[in-house]
Length: 206
Image (cartoon, rainbow, N blue to C red):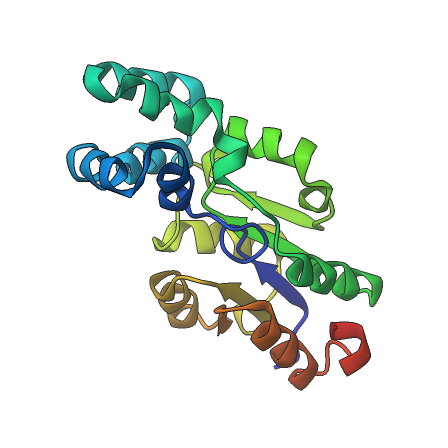
């Protein structure tokens, strides 16, 4: 079936998301390893992605671990430095698709408040035809309900959606529903896929 819309994940597709790298730079790798071994920071972030309040969740988590309080609060206070930098080639691909009239959607595990903040720093986040943000939807990848909600909202057949994500488990759910998928491991491969699908010309995918 012809592709009628292209769906982008955001973290590690359009914006690098490597919190460990940030902490290695700020507190050193040894302390970062110790903190991540003791504190489930990704579990904390999962709550934000599910729709819990960004500030309240992180600050409450910090109070559970007084010895790491300041470092945990960095996840909130320095968040835009954790979610950085943008991946320029991917952004160009997003914009090239829209310039061709191809609908482009976002499907992302992202909190409500921090997504709104990110849109003020990364203008391309405002350029999707549709934004499917887990925190707003109270559903997260890789669980089926969020995919069902995308299908119901956009009204397109699952087989007409091409979805790029860096996490295989997120793609597996999409494939099980009939979506076309691309495992994103860098923008060049994604560019080549978009050209192969006839959505962009080679010179448009640079």
